[in-house]
Length: 216
Image (cartoon, rainbow, N blue to C red; front, side, top):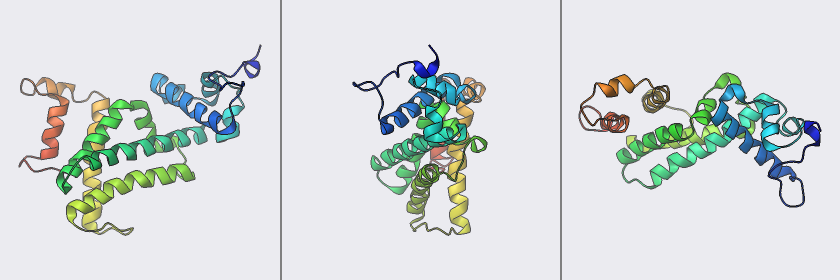
């Protein structure tokens, strides 16, 4: 029996996926592979095998590997935006809300490391795909809007120099921390920090800043 003859796993009763369910099943399969084997293990054939469908199925829905990765990254950015928004909704005051999205940013990266790393691998993605472009824009607007709250001004499509600089500073801080944390780069610093210090406690100190005011 070749792969195209195998029954499709996880299909609804009745035997086969309908169009929308197959697309979602392929994305779920791709995400499992990504978190388990890394982006290097994620191919169209691997996604098809994981979902238990023919090798042609991913091409029918995503065109090529870039298409699959881009749609998966779009899904990641949608969750990412929702996670940051949830942090905002649970916080009061511009400064507390700014710190809340920083925590949500790092928490998302640690919870979904493979997906997080894919989302920022621009060489593997097609940012012109509508779903990815919209999802990236949505995540950016959460950050930009929160910076605007802190500055007590609206953030429009055209940024002032000060607005652009503050958005870049906030993004650089939390993204840099997330990436270095995933790479294990902070282990030696934590080992030499005061007893009881953790990455989490040091991140909170970063958010407060040296003068006990939030750094972002």
